[in-house]
Image (cartoon, rainbow, N blue to C red):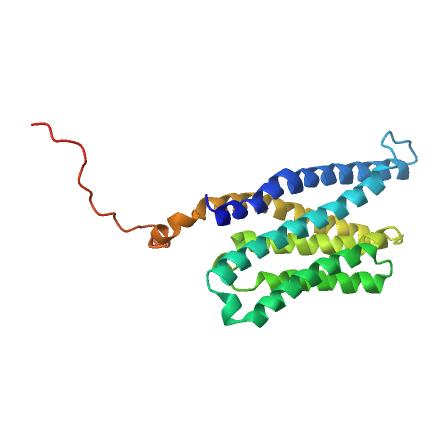
Length: 245
C-alpha cells in the first residue's frame, strides 16, 4: 500500500474506533436522561444518578467535535490527493488552494468558538459558519459525492449528520430554559434523524470502501464500464508451464 492508500483508511478507522463507540454512549446517556426525567416528573424517585444529564451534554459535544473532525479529515484527503496532487491544482490555481486552506481553518475556529459562545446570537452565528464551511469544502473538486444517487450517498449522509449535530450543540442551552419543552422535542427529533443517518453511514461507508481501488489498481479498474458492470478482457498470456508430450 502506498501513502495515499494508508491515508484513505484514516477516516474509516477513526469512525469505527472513536465515533461509533461515542454514538452508543450518547444514545445510552440520552435514554437514561429521559427515563430519569419521566420518573421524577411522576413524583417518584429515580435510581438513575442526576449526573447523567450533564454527562449526556458533554458526550454530545464530544460527538459533534469528533464527527466534524473526521468529516474534515475525509474532505482534506479527497481534496489533497484527488485535486491538489492529481490535477496539479497548486500550479493551476494557487489562490483556490489558499482559499481551501483558509476554509479549513475557519471551520475549525468556528466550531471552537461555538463551544465557548454563551449568547444565543453568537451560537447561531458560529453554528452557521461551521455548517457553511463544511458545505463549501464538501463541494470542492475531488470530492466523491454521488450526486446522481444522493439518496444513498455516504457524502450527503455525513454532511447532513454533521450539520444536525452542530445545530444540536447550538440549541443545547435553550433546552434548559424552555419550560414548554419545544426545544427538547426538536432536539430529540433531529437526533433521531441523525441516528438513522449514522446507520446509513455504516452501510454506505462499507460499500464505498469496497469500490475504492488501491493506487496501483486504478489505471486498470478505471477502464471498466461501471454502469454495465463489464471490464475489458486481459490479453491471453502464454503458459509458462512446460508442455508434456
